[in-house]
Length: 269
Image 1 (tube, rainbow, N blue to C red):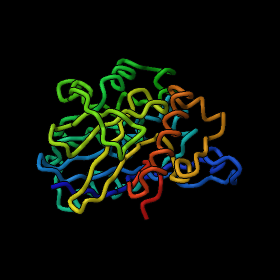
Image 2: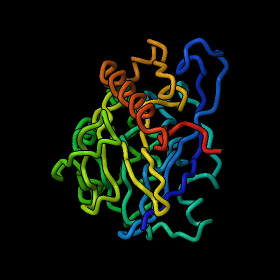
Image 3: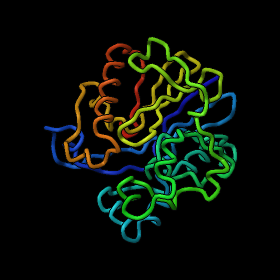
C-alpha cells in the first residue's frame, strides 16, 4: 500500500531566464514541494520544504546573503508540520523523512519531527557535515536546521546493496531499495548537490512517480532539455554531472511518457 500526496511549504523567487534562457528576467515563483507518502512502514516525508527557522538562521552574515539572494516567502500555516496537522497527522506519526539533499528548502522542517528517522545518501551527508561559514553558504546549507541528534537517527540508503533498475527506467541503471520491499527506490542524481537522492515509486493505482528533487527546477527543463544560464553553474556541486543527469532524465521522459517526473520546484496546481 503506497499513496503519495504533494504539498508545498513556502516558495522562493528567481528570474525565469536563470533556469529557462531566452525567457523573461521577471521573477517567478518556485514552490518548495515535499511529499507525504503512506507506506506499510508508516507515514513518510520526502523532504520538508521551508520552515520559519529559515528566517531565524539567516538573520546574520554570512547566512543573511542566502536570504538576500533567494527571497523566501512562507506563511505559518504552510509549514509541513502545520499542513500535516490539518490532515490529522501529528508530528510524532512521521516515521521517516527521506532527504533528497541538504539545501535549506529541503530540510527546513527536520526539527519538527522528533520521532522520525532520516534516510539519505551518505555521500550527501558527508559533504555538508561540519561545513560552516562561506563554504556552507556556497553549499546552500544552514547547520541550524539540523537536529542535534541527526547522526543517531540517520539511515544511509546507499549502505544497502545496489539493485538493477527495470528497463523502463533506462538510462538509469542502479538504485537502492529503501526498505527492501520494492516500494521505494532511491536513485542518485548527481550534479546539483553531491549525493542528491531521487525517489522512484509506484502507488496503489499503478501510477509511477520519479521525484527528482533539484535535478532541474522546472518540468520544461527536462522535457525540452533546457540547461540553465551558465551563471547558475556557480550553484552546482558539479556542473558537468548536472548536465549529464538532466540529459538522462530527458531520455527517460522520452522513453517512458507514462512516468510522472516531479521536480521539487515545479507547480503542483
